[in-house]
Length: 542
Figure 1 (cartoon, rainbow, N blue to C red):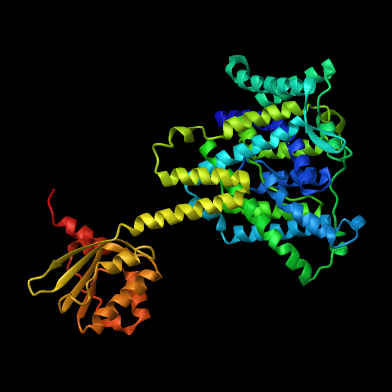
Figure 2 (spheres, rainbow, N blue to C red):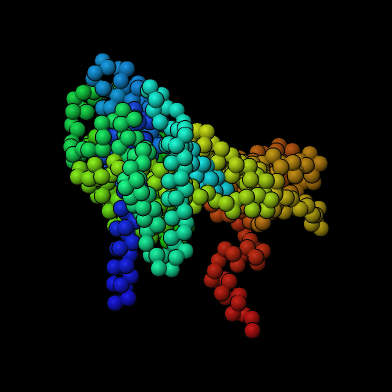
């Protein structure tokens, strides 16, 4: 009991320190994604707080961090712009349509959890998972390159001269601290990301270096600063936009896309955190928690969100394992907004970029380069495809494309495995012994095995080594039986599974006389009846 308490107390310290680090990293990310979506920075910051807080308490994956994400922000751009076009420029209707869409998105995600759709994440093949990780690492890296730009006359231009060298130097210093600190025995338990941010921030403040900070980043984007109050209920959403079928027709497609992207990114991140921590999360519980969080976020003026892989890995690498780490990150983010905005605005962007670059290095599956010549070419293609589509489009399209391609490859490979061994009985009856899976992909190969016109008068088809998998297979058997009967030949079907026999009996009365129920094959008896198997074993002396 004492050991259990000691471990819990130790983890509390790690959760809190890791949560503070994540809170610092959340600030520029939430602000940047708000700018992408075309809304005020506080809309993104409030979303990061509320989504992170609620999912940390009720979600299915302790230690996973959720908040406003870029994958959702890019979809929200057109939603906000189309919504603004529906009214006068000063009405800002796009923002209210966004809140309504986020609420509807939340209900869709709750339904996904209630109907246990989260379990389908298990169907995602490993090459898709690896491609997702690599693609997301590239996306995170590319998103950080924008931090090497500054605003000049309203346009973003690359840093030059001393500003560029200061930025590069501070980024490298942060990365060096994060890399070297764990190697020192006395400092192994310190959160290297937090130490790196504090050291670099101290250098910038005391050296009075002219570099980009969180405050200048917000102001360059058109914001007024980090300072804000507590989130308030935005019931005016329902009075500023019409609640009718036209509104539903406008926001529903966006809500559906956002819900799908949010769930896919969250469940993929959940799987990744499961692998890193060697524990198991609850995907359906995460769907419900995320949906509930988005509903509340929409009501309180947030832009919605989902799991954030970068911040989640920062948390896990920093020792955050429990729900307290996510709660701490969310609470400290709110504290930054309400009480400590002037201090957080002094944190140099370079320190946060350095942390994210180390996340990129830790996220990318470098082992994928070593296994490229050791895995099937189709898996290599899927891996590269998912990585590329994640970068070019978005996560949802990439994962769906990867799953579809993997499924098609699997179906094609299994379609080629159907076999038929042919032999004759003494009375001239021809027997076809079918081997392999019989499903929609193998139907053509299955039909090619039979010579209806030249076969003898009596035919037996033995399915003991085959599995009839779907309706297409049943239809193929039905069509084959009809062909033999049209030629005036008798046909017997043997060793069909019970579920297949039931379906065939329902499909047509012609099967009543051609499916053999009396089984004389001992292998089939043993597989079908465990009691017979036990009885048979008892007859032998060992």
